[in-house]
Length: 115
Image (cartoon, rainbow, N blue to C red; front, side, top):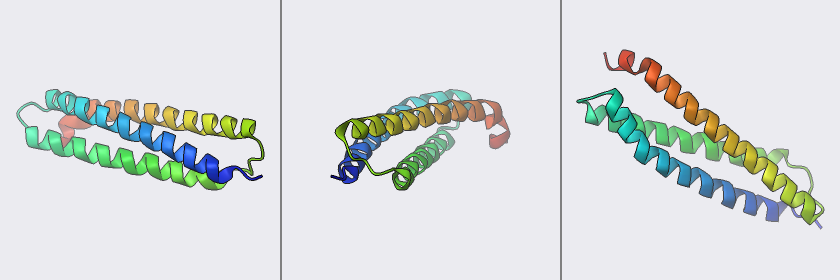
């Protein structure tokens, strides 16, 4: 029996939930962080944070959807769990790398952007 469709559904449900939850948290806390980097420019801070959130959603959800084509045929429930855990771990790793990359870029180049 091919368990790929079940795996796709479970994987997309888990990863999209994680992506949306982390995105909301980063958006809420990121607004405060960006506001401290650019004082007296609340409108620019809000726009930067919205762009970061949209890029985050598009990149991560798009990557999740694209990884589905690389899955091999899943024939057992053990393989199903292994694949879902591995693919979900990769998404969480990518999210963490993007988070720190965004922080680095914003703190390093924000003053150049507003001048």
